[in-house]
Length: 189
Image (cartoon, rainbow, N blue to C red; front, side, top):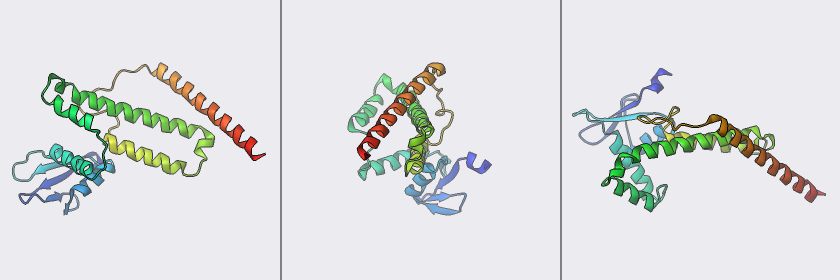
């Protein structure tokens, strides 16, 4: 398990081929994207210079997905990102993006936990598959970071208030589910 804690080292040769040092074979960008989706950290370095090329290749993976029509980044977001490189806002953008993904991961994770607690929902066919897919999505979106993004601190939260809001939301979901069950049973009669 200690092996999974270390980033998977990929070396780029002068021919631009990418070499997986763990398995001693060549890999493609799609292979690297697969490692990342599985929750693995990856580091890509130039064999000759030792330069870290990870960021460059991650951006290339994103660009390829976007060019194939797998759009996740709306044009206005891309435009704002380009603008942020030439403004003072550029210094705040990385922390903002990191905290946004951290909050997304936390809220979706809590939503899935709460859905699992609602007994009728957990018994629905395909619920476990949906839950596993949601967890895979979160892992892919956050790169598997559990304690937040490197170089950032998690936003301060009032856990008591958050718990109260979650309980109220869960109670509302339970009430709506009960109403739906009642309506369904009346339709069956």
